[in-house]
Image (tube, rainbow, N blue to C red):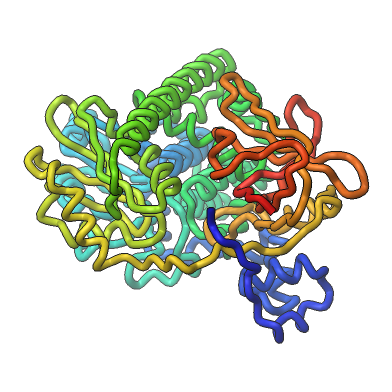
Length: 574
């Protein structure tokens, strides 16, 4: 069981936020918002005020001019995107732009996750050379593809890189680069996701075409680009970039557009998932939409996800949504099987090392990141999992529990890997078969050098509430701080000394858990925990048991009926 303490806040700053309730004041201060002006900006995003001029981004005018030239000359343009929930939406919104202006010499290319890997590849470029492509626009990739971009440029294909990943020691010699992280770029928002950068390009193209009307290009309706925020907003939430500044604005308005989006594929996907489009929140993006889009590349090919989101045909959209939902179900089954296998193996270990390393030649490498993340959270330590790809290469994924940088950990034992990469929380690797048996020992030794774990650190909650304070007014107040995500965590509340009225399991396989608690002034309130067994919290709970627990507030709109409930994080005997 974790320990919990009230989040400490600077006392002096609270006097500056007199216009806000005690709860709002605490939530603002927890986000380092100390003045009413800052609070107004945070709580009420404004499109005109908060969105930056896209032409502030380095190379933007050069990129716009090159694309307009390509359209004037009727060159074939290829949108080369990554295969995930950032690259695919980014490619869709650029594809929508070209379709809207009536330019149809556009192709979409997404590499196969397992066969081609991330970024550009020589075989794909050769294919485009044969097709006499004049321009490649990358989305959410390219900044590290020095050799492949040089090869494309040498063979007469200009490459425009749009990316958001960290810039390496060497920049590719592309025609132009849009990346707010590159040296010399004065764009204010450095933490855009890949689709966010693509959206800024669309904004710039729209502005240019409106002021420099080109013969043969369709007129773009006023406000059209804002409808592309469904794609940019989804990606911003799913890619877990910091939800502050312009990113917060994109996510905030992106959710508004998502709830009204006329995109046939999106509507079909939500219908299949039984999600109520009118009430979508960030959790629906993260746990309903993103897994189905990502399932395309994990279990098949990402081109199906692109086709779904770009579809203008209802029959096609329905068939693609059906297919993605089915392979996502297959993915969940495979992940559950892998987890059961891992849990069985871990139970046989007498003393668990500080780093978990497990593998199986039958495991699908593209699914390992999902499992590793879940296990790192459960076992509170870094997890490295490996499988075998195409019968030969051992490839894996790793996730940190937050106690160390996973990249720093891998660097300490870099000689064990054929290839490795990643960042603080997540990474990937490949290794030779003879290294498998010593990897756990080496990583555990290295962990002692890079670990930042403080065993005395409590989990902090934002406020203590009573069950009677769980009402729609409180929910609306808390919701005004959303969308929640990276850098803007969902508020966590402590409920002390309450009585359980009922404990039950629900779901097709009884895999979910529901507690019903008695309110002091009558009525019950439910707290649910998905994919949780009754004994998962370390002790037994029965009717009339006094407990304390921590939870998030949430609203459910199952079958269109609004219900206020709690999302359980932890529960313990009072």
